[in-house]
Each structure stands twice: as C-alpha cells, then as structure tokens.
Image (cartoon, rainbow, N blue to C red):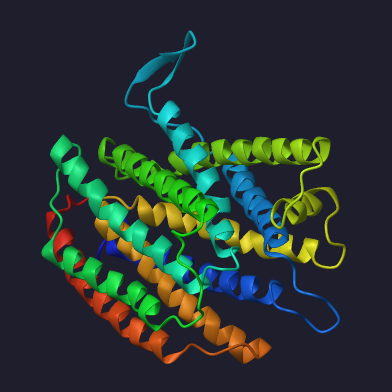
Length: 361
C-alpha cells in the first residue's frame, strides 16, 4: 500500500524540505543581490536590508496565520494568568515568539561586523543550532518528555554536518578576527544561542506533549501564536529604538542606517527589498514545521533543517554567479557539500528506522 501522507509521513517531510529549499534559494540570491553594487545604484546597507526584508517576511507570515485563523489551539490544559484562564501552552509559546524576535535580527547583526568573517559567523551559527538540537534531545529524554532514542545514524550525521560547517573555518583566509574578541559580537552571538536554545526546547516540549492527532496539524497553532508574539515584539522594539535614537541623538554604524530605513526608506530599493522579504516569510513556515516535525527527534529535525539550508546556500551562490556575475563556490564549499551529502545518507537511514516505530494513522 502507498504511504499515507499524514503529518508524520516521509512524503510530508520531503515536501517541507522541497519548499524550504526553494524559498531559501530565492532568499539567498536576494540577499546577495541587494547587498551588492548594481549599475547606477549603490548596494543597500546591511541594516537597511534587515529592516525591509524582515518587514516583508513578517507581513506575509503574520498575515497568513491571521487570515487562515491558525491561532485556534487544541490545548491539553488550562492555566491562570493575571486572573484570566487561558490555554496552558500560551505563555511558553509567547516566550518562543520573543526568542524568535531575538534570532531574526541577531542573525544579520553578526554578519555586520567588519572584522569578523561572514563565513565564520555562518559556521558558528549553523553549528550551534545543530548542537542545540542534540542537547535538547538529551535533556528531554532525561526529563521523560521525549520517549524516543536518538539513533546512531543521527549522531553520525550530526558529526558529518559539523565537519561540513567547520571546514570553512580551516580554509578561511579573510583575516577576520574571532567573533569572541569583540564584546558586541559576543553579546549578539550569546543572545542568538540563548534565544535559539530556549526556542528549540520549547518547540520540542510542545511537540512531545501533544496528544496523538492524525487529522489536525497542531503545529499550525504553535506557529501562529509564536509569529504573532514575534511580530508584536519586533514592532515594539523597533519603535523604542527609533524613539530613543531620535530623542537622544544616538548615532552609529548600525543604529543610523537602521533608523534611516524606518523613518526614510530608500526610494529606489526599499519596496523591492520588501517584496524579496516575502520569500523570507515563506521560509519561516517551512523552517518551523521542519523543526517541529512529528515523530522525530530534535537532533533529526534540526539536521534536516540545517542540511537543507546548507545545500540551498550552495545553490543560491551558483545561481547568483550565473545570473549576476557573482563569485562561484570555492573548492572548500564543494568539499563541505560532500560531507553534507554523506550526512544526508545517514539521515535517510535514520528515517527508514524511524518509520518502523511510528504508529500508522
């Protein structure tokens, strides 16, 4: 019999990976395009692009969940907050949304340090997320929340993935400083890791405490509430930064272009960067649903997410080089891709083993 496409099927997993891959490639090409100098137009500042791209992504993601009313939650219990009885999941999902609001800007901010190699920044962020997934699994297994074990194939894939991202550090010849020699960079990187750690733990706590449901996708409600909380946090923080910067006349290489992007958008490129951000918003759907994929460990889901983004990153580099005369991937990128594909092979073996233990719908 053909495999039924329920929320835990391999077919659904592949569909999510395909969607994530396609829109991640679009996002990757867009970033390279807007941050490079174009004929007759200067490149956008990284902070300006952050504002326009995030705005576009936030509008599409939040708009969809509000229009489709995904925020209706099938709760497993109730709790009281300030005298109001609400679903017990709401407080920690809102916390996850706040963490998301930290992850979004810190990702770009870490790339913005001129003394730090972009490649190294990418390595430490991707490597950190892979490790976080394994740590979260270990914690939740010990807590009795996760009833599954992490397969040896998943551990092998994790090691190969870490080799793939780390090999770029060995070959890096940009002369950039370590991310750990700059206090602002340390603070930003620390915020990124802390926020992602809490977020991945919360995602998996929610996933591993759901009742079995083969009909309704319970992850949509999580994504909706998290997205609404994230959007509200980003808006409040943005308004606060602009108001304080304007009133106290605060300037700087990051704060000035950020405030300018909000108060006086670039007339030539802001709307196009906003439109490009729509693809970034679509990426968020696939990313969250992969992180929270039913019946899989955080190690597996995190690896699927990161490996897909790594392959998409290589493809976006190739496309940008072909379409806009950019630089082609270096030898080290192709070597890393070999490790990535080997990791995918182990993941495929783990997926075959995992299917055998899943309850059929």
